[in-house]
Length: 320
Image 1 (cartoon, rainbow, N blue to C red):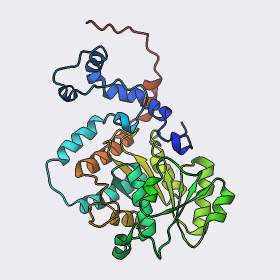
Image 2: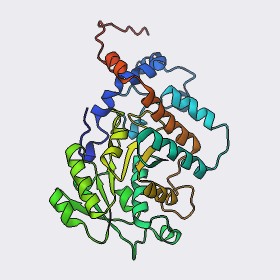
Image 3: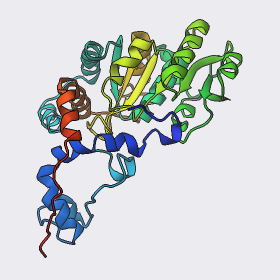
Image 4: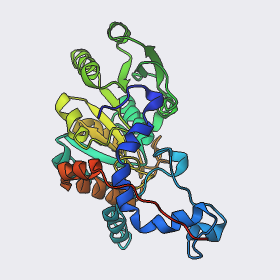
């Protein structure tokens, strides 16, 4: 399955639909409660019911306003274990970065509070690097490289780039991309995939400008987590709370170790950093890593056979 290239469709229904069978399998134990909720019978022990909040049968997709995905059982277990201890968040991010490198082939990685947060942290990294005076200076970019070239034009998520102080330069073709690059260009942002992405990476490498690929809904297929490192993307991000089925408030930023380290320096827990408000806790960090490890251990061929299995039609009778 290929991801849609349009930024507005990056949280597309088709990406979520690909994960539906697995989602159904994981959520099977909750099926009765959901069916009861559909006919107005919500279990008394439901934490949402006690607040007067409806639970939903999600027929649209892993949209943020619908609370993203349902977490894998391994993710829930990992988060419960993580919640039992205090840790140094930077030490944890460094250790997780090494593990992400082992799993993906990227030089390093970090867990963010979502794909949009990864966009912001990546932008700040490319604007200020890891120099404390420049980090404190953002979003004021006086004297800094400040232009971010947006391939394909603006998106609903470019505020994550602008909040760091970046000036957007909009382009709609590879020729425009080449001509838009200048001494003030700090980063290239793209949602393109496949051959288009490969050509844009080549342009970025030639110009020595970091390129960030935003593929928030790029999983499944899980192979994408390794593909973009092989293609040479300087930075790339995906959501942790969509197809990856990790914590909703998590995402992954992967790529060059120098840029990931700079992104960490511009992000929580550092006070004064522009992305300090984008806090990701130890539970989300461990949970997101557990989601990736779980996906990479799965027998994808067996899973595909299960997804494609044609079972006899069955009727479900709900008794009032």
